[in-house]
Length: 343
Ligand SMILES: [Mn+2]
Image 1 (cartoon, rainbow, N blue to C red):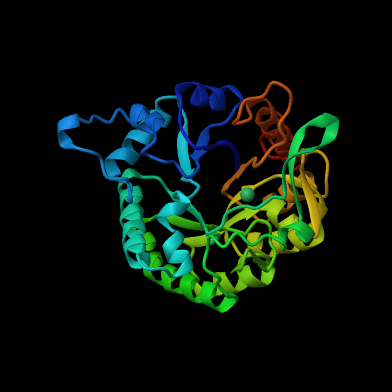
Image 2 (image 1 turned 120 degrees about the vertical axis):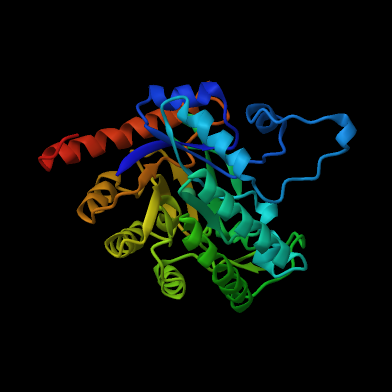
């Protein structure tokens, strides 16, 4: 088990140096938009006006991914995982809309390219309408800005932007998707890791949210029963339904060897109302989480997740993430020292 930094939407030399400075040996990248100027610059892509407008990237090339990995390794770091493709590369597959099959083919090509580039884990989720909050800047400890969710408000939202989808439809779409892509992931040697729906409520804005509790993950792990298909276990999202339920799910899936990586964050309260919290407060006990992972022989990585926004922090959250990462690493060192093994 190791503590990593990342969830970078873009990579910069400074961010990679920062990850090393706070003691991490590897990083993750999260839903990178390779068409953004920052990525074009970082990957040192060359374009000429004569070539005409560039078509949007629908699948990642092995070359882009090798360049990404090489840039990370140049800082003495490993690239452990890409935590998902941008949502607009998978939304039609999730919703069963025209174009779904093309998105699945592109996803398969991306998996093959990741295998060629030697990037071992690709996260994904089945949330076409994304993470929802009813407040983006509520006040947490000391006035830190946190996101919050109140289901009484959330259930009143009807944007009409997505077609209504039932649980049965969302499951059928997912089963079609995973049946198509899992053999490719296995061939490519790339692990697929499913993150839960956040918030884990049955439906929002007319679209069912199917991956929200232990039972739904048990069904998913049984349907796609392979070591190459596992869970991006988000303690925060699971604990939004209650910390005891989160710990039960963690224990079950860690001992079954189905957790690929862990988002370690806490929440204050639970549905129908919760707010995000610092790692050292709220309902999630990070000591209990890490002890359980150690006892289960977990050999993946642990990363901080949404962190409260503290004074003079950056958008990515250098200050708050450094606090969370150091806190997690300190607990892990203490547990390992108590266990008699080397830190
Ligand atoms: Mn998460």
